[in-house]
Length: 224
Length: 221
Image 1 (tube, rainbow over the protein chains, first blue to last red):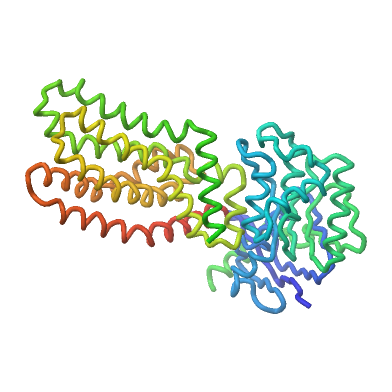
Image 2: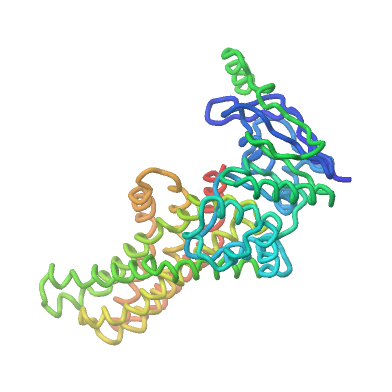
């Protein structure tokens, strides 16, 4: 069984130490909540998990193989949802979606795209150009992207922003299905999302608090 | 390969639906060349003498004008982040986007060039070589330009910075492009110039996507 884990991760943004000595572990079917106040590094951790950001120290592994040894393989098994919806204003919802489904390796991108839109309760926007979609519809379209092509690990950065109650409920169902099929999920959120049995990771536990300590760590880094 | 073609297809579709981006480059090219007779006077001999250089300089500037947007939209709406997370290598993403950019902006320039050459009273013998040099040269411009577009991504006033970075690198293309036409007009063979242009293209084709991909990885971090 593949396990996605990180150990002793340290993340530096600019000259600010965001978190240090962070460990996490996600097994198939498991979910991880990333919690913490604004600026505690939830988004940074998700970007580290996705491979967009390199941790300055620590190890990220999939099935005990370092992710840095197999970056291409890692990209093939993740779906990342960030703050931006990546919706092109001049393409229709289904065109937007089937493009991402093709890139994700779906066999029938257009069919998958239509099914995914249906699953998120917005089949009627299929032929609507991106520029006429509301913020909530764009978000649903972005979330439809993760079910339009298969991937084992979902990295979701505040996925419920702009969603209404009904959409959040639908989305909880989708996550539950994904986990039941052996998928893994890491979610950062400020809203309550029902994910039974999910573990909590409090990012503020790993924030280096005293100011001098940052400098120490940085000096060590220089010395090394 | 399907994914590579789909990315080209998406970019072409975006460019055609937005329309303006594609037509601005060719309109700028035409206007730029048309300004010269007003500036240097309508003396046919002078115009014929400078035609090759003027058309090539205008092509450089027109290519530069549209390059700023090469990665900008994808960067701003988060698509670039997702493209970098897809299984398509970043180098292939750059190559696909550059190719789509060239099809949309480079090809219309090539189509308009003979008309402008006629306007500048260039000898008809030079037309074939003019089109040939542009056909080999404009892809080099798009490829080199992609490096600048990737490096200036997210910078304030990136367009100005892009010109300063890239225009010096365009000089060899300009020299051999205009040189080939001058050679043909003076009854010499344009072959050496064309071969050197081809060499530049052969070099830029693998190196430019590689360099741009490295810059884009930094930009999405």
